[in-house]
Image (cartoon, rainbow, N blue to C red; front, side, top):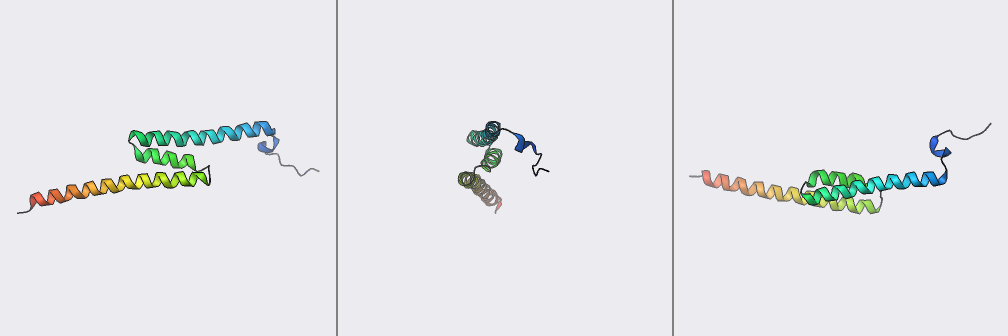
Amino acid sequence: MTNRCNHPVYEMESEQLAMNMALFMFAFWALSVVGLIIMAAGNRKVGGVLAIIGSILFVPLGLIAMFGVRSVMNSEQDESLDERRRLASTTTDLGSP
């Protein structure tokens, strides 16, 4: 009686397993790079989400990327909020008697 599991991962050769892991890591890295390109193109929300998802696999270095992307996304929200506040203040100033 053997105590071996029949899971496909355990039956792979080590070279094949290493190649599959490298492809998996490359896919996440590519997702992160695509997210950064989309962020640079102007769509920071979608690009930020893709960059964060792509960085999840690369702990602890990916955490630095996640914090950076999050701060860029927050700075955009702060700029948008300041712009809306300025617009609201000029609108209310125009309507006052």
